[in-house]
Structures are given as structure tokens and as C-alpha cells.
Image 1 (cartoon, rainbow, N blue to C red):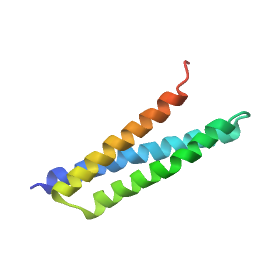
Image 2: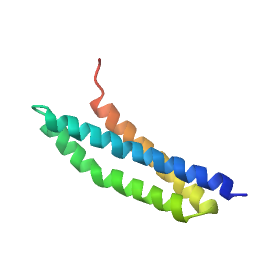
Image 3: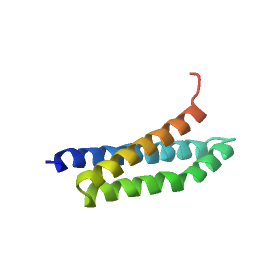
Length: 96
């Protein structure tokens, strides 16, 4: 019964962490194509380890864990991944 809650929580956490990975990929690609995008590309490079480790832990939680541990890992990864994504978005949000 607990797995009915644990599995979706773990997968949502992994998806949130994956969103951060995807956003960094798009941001890094755009920075690489743009003149003067060096500082943004450097920032993206510095954030890759955080994003990949978070996504990896989320995937492990989604695939191999069950019960309360999956809920804890999934919720933790989801919250951390979402906060990391929001931090990156706020840093580079444009006015238009």
C-alpha cells in the first residue's frame, strides 16, 4: 500500500531533477552559440555536477527503493532539484 505513494513521489522527484538537467542543457547550448556567452557557459559548467548527482539519486530512488525510503529520497530530490532549477532561472531571467 505504501508503494502506491512511494513510487509516484520518487518518479516526480526524478522528473524535477531532470528538468534542471534539461534547463542547463538548453542554457549551455544557447550560451555556446552566442557571442559573450562565456560567463553563462562557465556558470552552467559549474552547475552540472549538482544537477547530475541530483538526477542520479532520483533515478536510484525511483528504480530501487520502496516504502518510506523512496518517499524520503523522492521528496528530497524533488525539493532540491526544484530549488536548484529556480535558482538558475532567477539568475538568468530576462525582462522580455
